[in-house]
Image 1 (cartoon, rainbow, N blue to C red):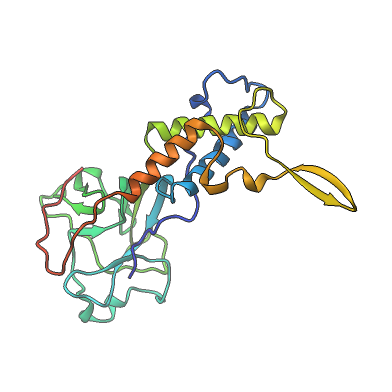
Image 2: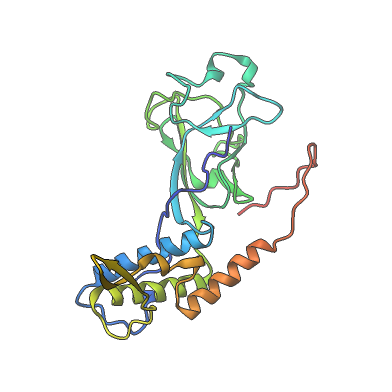
Amino acid sequence: MSDPTPAPPAMCSPWAGLGDVPDQAYEDDAGRLEQWLGFASEVLYELTRRRWPGVCTTTVRPCASPRFSPTPTWWPGDGRGATGTCSCNRSAACGCHRLSEVRLADNVLAITEVRVDGVVVPSTEYGLADRQYLVGYLRADGEPRAWPCCQRLDLEDTAEGTWSVTFQHGGLPPMAGTMVAASLGAELNKANSGGTGCRLPKRVTQVVRQNVAVAVLDPLTLFQEGRTGLPEVDLWLAAVNKGANERPARLSWPGRAQRTRRMG
């Protein structure tokens, strides 16, 4: 199965908020500026190849795949191919046993809640390893906290025989990304509210209609070749996109020894 939480198609939260816009008089319509900050964040998210979606919150219903060899694959139980219960309740071949470690996703920021049999598990009984894995610690009775591989997907996670994990993943850009998102959002707000001093470039195209030449703004040229026309924004985009292209390759092979999990 594929990763439980693939890269989200849209942003979860904006890169910048009202407090990130310096010296901006928006008291008359703060809501409108906030909308343009969100728009600017989405544009920069796309221009940086969807690397920083913001902070996303996801709840998954893990269930071990029947193709168990030698490490089970986990996926969020959303009902795909399952009616009633996990397939491992019907076949021992899937390795229906209890596990102490479950892979959630890449770039997990925090685990906010774990439920087993409808009961919230104390946060002292689990942790996050390598920003990917939910790992069980000791329970209050001294026994190891292990995670079930099977559950009833036809029931809510508040019922017995179910379990779920709610966690935050994704991430915000570095501070410079927040700054340029605030800058671009503020200028877009000026351009669309009649404000003065807008620094976005004015691009005009001549269109001939019925033998009459009309000058119109061509919005499609504004972000041509991944640029915005704002020097600080374009400089940052060039830097982060170039850095992404120059990252060294990583070598991996089957049977490679598993390194120790890094907790936290």
